[in-house]
Length: 492
Image 1 (tube, rainbow, N blue to C red):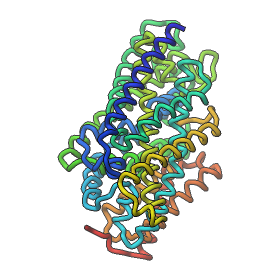
Image 2: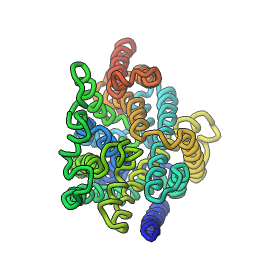
Image 3: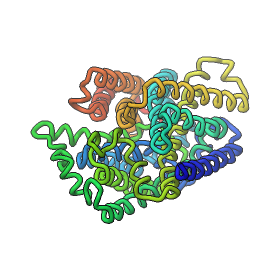
Image 4: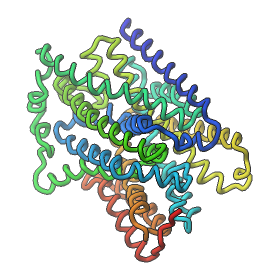
């Protein structure tokens, strides 16, 4: 009990400091542009750390380690796909999105797309924003779910209660400070996360060498003892199944190619091209270290506890990160590092909330009402804060209804296919194909999202991943629609 009190105290201090920092940054927000995209004046190092903290979320500290713990070496393909996508995005897209957002004076992800295709601006805003808000309810729910699981592991709280606590932490400073508060709190979270992903594996290897009573004294032996599928890079699949496993893991690559609005908005907010280069180097370096650490923690958990569902194994694979840290570290150090998991969830949930709020306000509510178009900057700011609060409550309710047995990995995968696969095509063609037309953008969005929903809900996801197919189905729709309705891309 003393350890639990110590952990709770440390986490309370950290989270209280985080909230105060967020509120302090929020005091600098004066306009809707500040609230939505920090005035497009972010230094490169801030944008990079914020993008990485947001991009990894509970995925890198709970979802990916949990998958590595449950499936072994197979998850290397997932890591390769993600890392390749992140590197490509930073090298190819970041500075271009920054330049284009500045030229078009775009404050939101959807406004960038819509202003690039002025003949269909209204319909693009409606279609894109509706899709983003709908899918992001699932994504925000995944972060609340991650908070519930972590607090359950630490204190034995009901995961549903943990979701509520996570929401209570996130909502106040996000409502108050918007994008600016979010990105500057992300910086702190990214630092805590990377420390956890470096120090955790190092001490995990030392722990295994000093404790012969664990399931296996090394990762290699743990994988062998867990079963043949754990030591295979293809999950012991054969024939066509080998391709399915590899492609399914690598398919995460396609969602990073500009199609995740919460990440692309960070690119858009970078001050200038020089800062974009600084951001690129930091973002890529952080990613390489983080993914090695996340996989290692999952495999170390396998060596300590044994496979999921075994006598000594974990009941829920996504408890592995906090369980490992609590096992190998004294309680105070574990508390500080586990705060990294809480930080990851906060950094994504707040980003998703603010993005959904600005998309809903700027692209759906304001265009639908002349009154709202005439309100003052102060009133716009108040409206954005109210919308953010309402969206947070709805997302929490949906996460509550989904129950505590839902896997974060599955929820994130769903969004990565529908939003990531579809909008990656839209962003890439908007930037690199002048003939890509406004009507083709609409066809791409409708086709990609519809296909994802049908594919997953008919059970075909088990055959071939929608993260792969959505990208290519949307790309095919884009090419056909552009051939039918060619329009010269608008340039400012």
